[in-house]
Image (cartoon, rainbow, N blue to C red; front, side, top):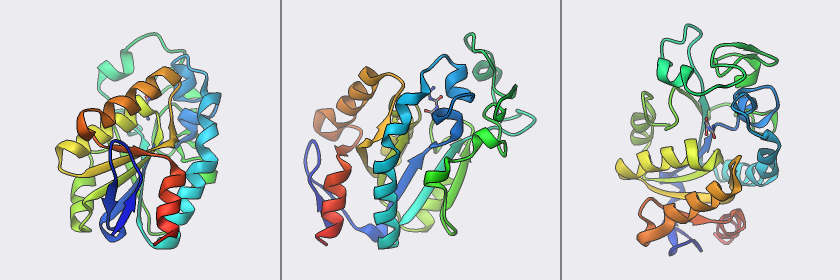
Length: 222
Ligand code: TIU
């Protein structure tokens, strides 16, 4: 059992029953020319978390823990993209349109890949999801349950959209979840802070938060 200094109180987990879930660290969100920028965002804010994510991923791999990478991705025919999602707002490019990194948010396109610095390794789960949450219309719950997973460590982007949605879905399904604060980022720093605060408020109403240093220290002390 590992005990980690976290907020609002210590987070205890068995690595064998815990998965590291990395949400949507894709070129579409982190590099210019993808979905994130098409929505009008300054995507340069997001790459700052990559070194901390790499340290955690490396330590978790050394431990032999389960890793899940998600990608927000739609089928080429957009049959899994509700018109409401495609037509909302006034983006410069819509989901499925041709962009500088291929078709926006479409599976298999260059822009839809996970950034090379965090590329999945053999044996790790790579899960395409059509929604913001990782559990909606995916086999994730079954995959975790088959492997006896009860606890989740979250990293990725963006904090208040796909990360928070996935943590809320996990919470309602009975998993204990922790968000690594310096391994998640938003296009809006104030939204990141608000999401972190609301996740851990009310006695961990959604889950726990901690810095990657706390996790790495706890893994080393093991
Ligand atoms: N727009 C935004 O902040 N995020 C997303 O659309 N998807 C994810 O968070 N992955």
